[in-house]
Amino acid sequence: MRHFGAGKGPRPVFEATLPTEIPCPAARRRRANLVLALFALGILLRLPTFFRPLLSDDEAIYATTADALARGDLLYRDVVDHKPPLIYHVYRAGFAVLGSYNTHGAHALVVLSVLLTAAFLFAVKRQEGTVSGSAGLAGAALFMIFSTTWHDYDALAANCELFVLAPQAMAAWLLVRNFGRPTSKARDVLIHLSVGLLVGIAALFKYQGLTFLGVSAGMLAWPALLGRLRWSRAAVLAACQVAGSLVPAAAYLAGCAVAGNLDATIYWFRFNFSYLGAGLQGTTAIARGLRRTLMIGGVALVPYAFGIAGAATTAVRVGRVARFRAHRAPPSEFAPPSAVAVLALLWLATSAVAVSTGGRFFGHYFHLILAPLCLLAGPGLLVLWNTGRHFRVALALLCGLPALVFFALASFARPLATALDESEPDYHDVAIRMAALTSPEERVFVWGNSPQLYVLAQRPMGSRFSFCNYVTGESPGTPTETGRWDADGNQLPAAWGMLFADLEARRPALFVDAAAAGWDGYDKFPVTRYPRLAAYLAQHYRPVETRLGVVIYRRFR
Image 1 (cartoon, helix red, strand yellow):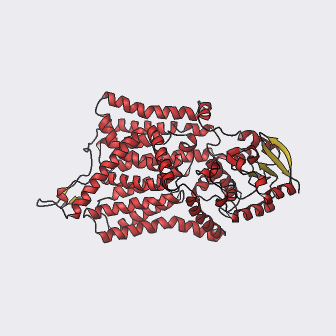
Image 2 (spheres, rainbow, N blue to C red):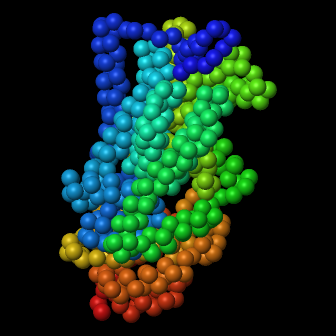
């Protein structure tokens, strides 16, 4: 990349923050071995996921939905969860390889996604020309370590956020690789269409993945601000990004139109706005966000501290550049931050918006800001690492201890983790009885918020809903879970009609009343609270067994 200064001709502007070094063959081998060791560490830290069938209720929802899809049901019409579609197909792909209800296929795919994200973080930082890629290696290592250092149901589970990050990191690499390089107009268009396509794929895992368009557009505005790209050209390429981002959704909707579930897909997409509106707002949301950030950032102190410091430094330099350009100063009078630093700052800002949307601030949401924080943290971490032995020891402890503690809590110290966190009902015990009372193809219905029972019993759902929140109005991450907020206002009236239609059409062999045991906060929603449901239960079912407070009914007519 070049600009014109006060001299007689163009001179190169190197945006690297550290000098470039050409390593000797022995150094390259050492670096390759270090890369392999770090990626092996990334796999090792996630091994506990393969020793438990389920890590969270979200995994249970994805698994039951994937099983329904494998049986021929159509998403959003015959089986419902309001998230974007790709996560269910990830679980279905895992089932196709390892068998129905086996979530370890999804666990393997999330490990692959983490490794891909780390690899592209490394590749992004390498574009900056830092010494032997050390800053990139540091960023990748931080991501692999600190993506595991929280409750296992947030950090290790195969949730949407970790699948969002892989295409976003790929898009980031394309952006910085193309930044300032002379290319043909056709190649520019292709690159930015590809960036948009990757953003669109990320959005089909989590709608907030679209926020990365703020990054990609910002990486066009930045060279335009520097006077290296015409604003009109930047606008054209930004339009290419937007167009590319629409392709995955358009293709999916076209498939839905052919299959016959387009109207249902649009209906449940619109429900997301109600879901966001039911979340925390105002100062309550801000307080929760700050509290969760302090807790998670306190554990992941190294990437958060160095990353926020790097973001602040970059923001100051960007502001200085904008001020200089506003006064039409020539480029020779200021030193802009690197393209990678600007990208990471934009990524952090847009990811913070994604994490904040809805005001729930679940722990797994914070994966979204971890990736850009690790990019920003690398250079500062290296400076302190090279300062002296005492600093290296301190940094090693700050990285190693959280990883060891949470690895232990997710594996051999599970009893301690259970004692420290909310205790989980004994789903296995009830699921065993459900399986014993039915044949593999008989459907069952669970009244409550306990989708784990379907997976552990390995029985198909008796309704399109794997949990009952759509009819009761309970909204996760809000005081409706504790009863401090009235859930009735969140009820979806149409969902009651869907539920009774399913019960009549599918005639589940068992009606499992988990609310009777007060499981998963459903003591507030007993069957008797809903007269029509209570009447239907009395008319068609008889109790056959009570297990741990859960009442199991058998259909008799």
